[in-house]
Every structure is written in C-alpha cells, then in structure tokens.
View (tube, rainbow, N blue to C red):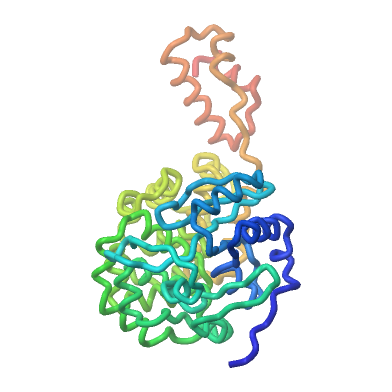
Length: 396
C-alpha cells in the first residue's frame, strides 16, 4: 500500500473554528478526527463544503466539554451519538464512534466505542470511511484511498450485509456512482442492490426524495438512472418514462428532471413528500402549453407575463429538450433569456384608482381590473395609466 498523503496544508482543516473544536475535545481526554466526505473530497481535489467530526468521547462528554468552552451544542441526532456543535458561527456535526448492534433495514441501534476501525467497518462505502486528524494525517482502515483515486464506489465488507442494515444504501450506491464513479459500477455491489431492491418499498418518502434529488443533480445522473431502470430498481420508486434523450438534454435540476422522468409528475408531491414549491413547479410543467420560438415577440411577452419567469424557464427548458433543435439553437436560447431582457411590467392602475374614478367598492372592481388588464396585455403593455382610466370612463 502506498504512503497516505497529508492534508496538513488544507485551508478548511486549518480553519480556527475547527482547530478549536479539536483542542476542546483533546482537553476533555478524547480525540476528534474529520470523517467521511471532507476527506474524500480533499483527496479528489474537490471543494469541501461540510466537515463532520468523529470522536472517542461520548455525546454527554462532548456536550459538557463544548458547553464549558462557550460553544453552542444541539442534540440533533443524540440517539445515534450525534450533536451539532457551533463554533464561532460554524456548525459541525460531532458523532461518537459507534458500531451497530441491531438493524431493521431502516434504522440502527448503536453502541458507542473508542475503536476507530470498528467505526470504519460499519460505514457504507470505503470512500466514506476515511479519517483525518488535526495535523492532517489520514487514517484508512478499509483501503478507501485506493477506491477514491480509482473513483470506485465499493461497499465496506459484505454488500448484502451493508444493505440489509439500511436499504437506503441501495440509492446511496447509485447516487455516489453518479456523483463520483468512473466506468461500470462495482459488480458485487450492483448485484446486491438488484437482489435486495424490494427493501426500497419500506423506506420513507422523505428519505427517497433526499437521495434521488442528489442523484438527479449529479454529473452521471442519466446513465445511472438508465442502469437503475434496467435492474428493476427505478420502478420501486416511481412510474417513469424512458425518454432518456430528454433527460440528458436538461440541466441538472432535480425538479426539472423529475418532470421529464415521472410518467405522472403531478403525483410526485405526495409520492415523495415534496415541498409545496417543488410540487407547484411540477404541476405547472403540465398545466400550461409551453412557449415556442415560433411565437411572435408580443405573444412571447404576453405568455411570460401570465406565467412568471420561473414557470416560463421551466417550460422552455422542457420544450427545448423535447424538440429536435440543437442545444445551441439561438431561437430557443433567446426564448429562455427573455426574462433577462424584458422586465415584466406591473399593471399601471389599481383598485384604488378605480374607486377614485367613481367605481363603487365591491366585486365589480375585480371584474373591471381584469378587463383592463386583458386589454393592456393584448395591447403589448403599451397603454399608460391615463389611457387605461380613459378606457374605463368610456364604459369598458
């Protein structure tokens, strides 16, 4: 095995907040090491955006030591040994070393330990089982560094055992392959995921949504989704279309890709427990006729006014992806850029203006406003406030 590199010069490792946390844990008689994704990304030369810390101290010891040091401590996952420690406005998840004593395919009961290798052996993939101490020394108990460098997503130990501990690891296998993998996925891992795919049926909608949204934003999302479909895995998650060409032509926006992937986009809000905003985006992709470059400029402006820029861009991107046009097509690009070139105007008259003009308050105000707005839009937004009020006085 080649010598492990050092991360001593990494800027994120030398942040004062993180080093202070290390010092507090050490002063309490324990040790803290950065675990998982931060070490993986650092070895890949990718940005480190989140730093999680593993420690030999119990959650109670972490809480006591960090509170005494003036840090904020929140028991965000206390049953599994995790507290969130806020150091100088920087949050860190600090988790006690552990190993599983009982699993049911969704959640695990754990016992705490001070054995770093035991903690590594319970993790999902070798690339996520790396540790780095305060001085930048890397600890690798499962040959994870080699898999990181080869961009191989390999389960720690026996794939079937890892999956039956938590069936969400099936989706994580594909998500990490889509994000980090090169070449074909690990054969043993793929076979285990396929054999155990029915375990996905017992997962919560929220956990499925979280993993699938990350997968659909990954660089290798489309070929990975195709692989999941071929292995009979995708059908456990949603009824889907197989127009992979459209998916490949869309930007890595999970909601937009879901709109193209799902055979019934409107049903996905309840199926995956999407947010109201995500559900509304999906509904809007099927509730409106998409714009086209063949529309005249004033027709484009009228539709953009009615839809708003968000729905406009979603519909244009989907229609463009479904068209035969090149992704460099100038007409479609101009259509997509219309919200950047044209500021959507505001109707120059209000209900107060109508009342001031002598209209009695009541439902008639809304009817008149809608009538004036229709004329204003049909006139390409040109009539001024005075012209609208004159039209009102003419009995419109």
